[in-house]
Amino acid sequence: MTQPHPLPRPLPSWPEAAPRLIAVAAGRAPADLVISNAAVVSVHTREVLQGWSVAVAMGRFAYVGPDASHCIGEDTQVIDAEGRYLIPGLCDGHMHIESGMLTPAEFARAVIPHGTTTMFTDPHEIANVFGLRGVRLMHDEALLQPINIFTQMPSCAPSAPGLETTGHEITPDDVAEALTWPGIVGLGEMMNFPGVIAGDEKMLAEIAATQNAGRTVGGHYASPDLGPAFHAYAAGGPADDHEGTREQDAIARMRQGMRAMIRLGSAWYDVESQITAITEKGLDPRGMILCTDDCHSGTLVEDGHMNRAVRHAIDCGADPLVALQMATINTATHFGLEREVGSITPGRAGDMILTSDLRRLPIERVFARGVSAAEDGRITVECPHGDWPEEVRRSVRLKRTLRADDFTAPAPEGAREVTARVIGVVENQAPTRALTATLAVNDGAIQPDPAQDIAHIALVERHRATGGVVNGFVSGFGYQGRMAVASTVAHDSHHMIVVGTCRENMALAANRLGAIGGGVSVWRDGRPLAEVRLPIAGLMSDRPATEVAKAAAGMVAAMAECGCTLNNAFMQHSLLALVVIPELRISDKGLVDVTRFALTDLVTDHTA
Image (cartoon, rainbow, N blue to C red; front, side, top):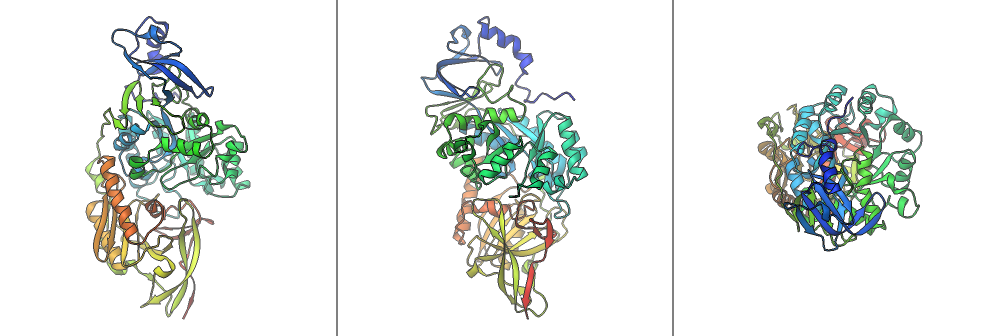
């Protein structure tokens, strides 16, 4: 199959641009842009080339060398780098735009000033709500942006068939169709790793369609077991994995020819524990890629994006040039795009950053496709919006107004107290713990126990208006008083997750999201404390990142006001239904034991 042109069309292909690039490099034609007197970072050779210059034409590098004066014409824009470093634009190897609570346009607007010029995105969040149509809407807006947003076709909706119900399903035919679209670079993370290990025909058909098209299969092996199951998964075809949390995880993946994607997101801090495979064990850094996986709007506005990940890797002991390789050329090479992006070399997209310090990495000026895109934290390009149909803005479908008794976990008949399974949140990590606790029973209902840091959790079905509510318990948030937090961001099925200590407040929070079309709502003592409106699929806002970040900050403050002390607690909240990461989760079908990939009972024992 002929691969569609991988980059958005304002940028001509290298063959189309080659005559002009050759003429500029030879001095027969003027460049559009020349940056001189720079310390050019070569990520191919891991060198800093002092006093070099670059020339850009038609959005691509034409000349990279010691003197570009022969490329300068009357209309050439010339910039003196004044000895500053010129590094490639940064690449995020794995992420989900929806997790920033922003549309592709607003996400791009937020990350460009941080030096991100290429993203490899898996829109499986919206795929769970609207299927292939949702993916197409994300893809189409992504192609409008002034930076490179490549799309991986989501592989698993539902992520664990039989254990959850999504708004729509993704089929092998959907994958095959998407692979014909421009900008589709592969298959999104294959989360159904038990299915791959078991030889599931649907999962293998999706992988085969991707490989037959010459694209990359994304991995997701969320298990500490590095025995035969891991090897079976690797044999199935996934080319990378971002679910490692230990040094041995990174080493095992690289030894199998997979890229170890190590992530620093808003809630994932998995770089320090894995980068030692390079910094201490001395393994080849070509096998490791930096990514974010998930960054919410507050992180983007306040802390950064891939620049934050690179700085963190350096702080963890990585040589700055190695860290830059992990966020540029390693990523591009992995997706078969090293001839398009990821380095400052002839023919590649003119994506680059001026910075005065390779360790602190201040992003002083950003160029995307040879155009000045940001300067001193201010964006200087437009990020066009796509068309989001009205029905996509009305995705929260509740059968009726919810009542307090909908949020009741019934006890066995005659029970005075029960031993119940409890989802245990682990700060800064995706996995949860499967806990048990003794809980009191009142009027036939199992009670939460704030003294034990045990709150109520409920999953409200919101795609088909079935009226279904599944109830359970969760520990780790530290909530006190009469409160509730409801969210339609609930990876990956994206039903509604409600956590609280008071059933009345849980009903109020859930009904509020039904009224506003989705988002996050925090209530205490019968009144709203904060809300984030996410009307697009119940996942995103098309408002600027600064506005969304402000609302999200209010949400975080409100959660803290209710007693929560967790770092990035909302990210933990939003993952409570992620039934492909151990150990215990909740879905519309019940509690899920993810170590066995099976439904399990809430109550294990009781006292009459």
